[in-house]
Image (spheres, rainbow, N blue to C red):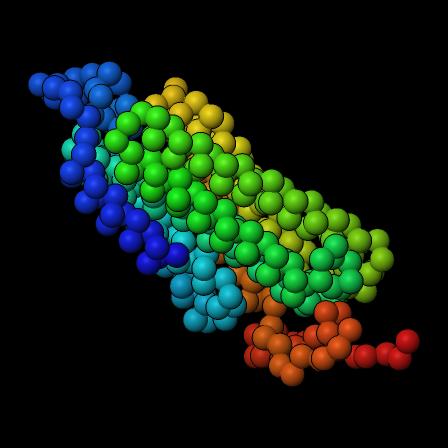
Amino acid sequence: MLRLLSFLAAIAVAHARQFGPQLPHPANPFADPKNDPYNPLGYIASDTLTAIAFSFVLTSAIVQTFMMRKWGAWWMSCMVIGEYTFAVGTGSRFGLARQPESRPIYIVEYLFVVLSPCAFIAADYVLLGRLARHLNAGQHLLIRPSRIMITFVVSDITTFLIQAAGGGVSIGANTPQQAKTGSNIFLAGLAIQLVSFLTFSAIFVYFVLRVHKFEPQAWTRDAGKRWYDDWRALAAALALSCIGIVIRSFYRVVELTQGFQGPIAENEPLFYGLDTLPLFIAVVVYVPFWPGRFILPQVHPPVGKDAEATPTNTAGERNKVSTVSEPQ
């Protein structure tokens, strides 16, 4: 994903230097940014808000990098990488605050901010499958744990590519009609991604309810531990992450229905309140509930029909795990 984002940004920047609106520049780009045809944001980015968002996201990424080294769960690395790229996009707004008419800087900012959350979504997809295996409750997923990861990750990659294609068309547009076409492609990718994630969220809720109803031993397996070491705390973190991503996805879909120059797109408080903040919550929630503390690596997984429901865990120094298999 990082290479693709960098590739798209490089092409976009090169194209932006070649083409652009053939209108006179305002004498002072800071005087009336809303009516400046060269200002893609429609406002002057706030350094204060940018600094807060950039530092928070980058700090979360750094902390989670150390958590991966300490507790494992390297399968969450896509989320951490996405946080770094999201921080790059957010940090680009410092440049826009000083050069509000810079289309190359805007392109880098937009691509990294809008496409990076695809990595957050992929991490949630992977986590649910891992959690189901950890609880030996894969049978309560509507899709088998191994397949749910593949199904939704493929969906995430597909919608990512659709959005990237739409962004590429919009960036390379020489006419308003071409820009509109790119915007529609981008919107289609976002809408499909939203439907896919809502479906995933429904499957997750169904799974938790089924475990609570039919698997009392699995439901209370961590009852003797502190609440923040209970797997249900991790499930609650996943639920909060899903809520944050859904809020952000709805915001982006509504924003694009109005176009890149619509009133929502040109409202900075809405951008931070309905995009950056929900996404930050969606990832930072895993700082106190890092999945590696709850889900241990598997060794010699069983083969056959029961593979989804009976994984084998390794016991580490940080967790004491005892599993007793009773004959049916």
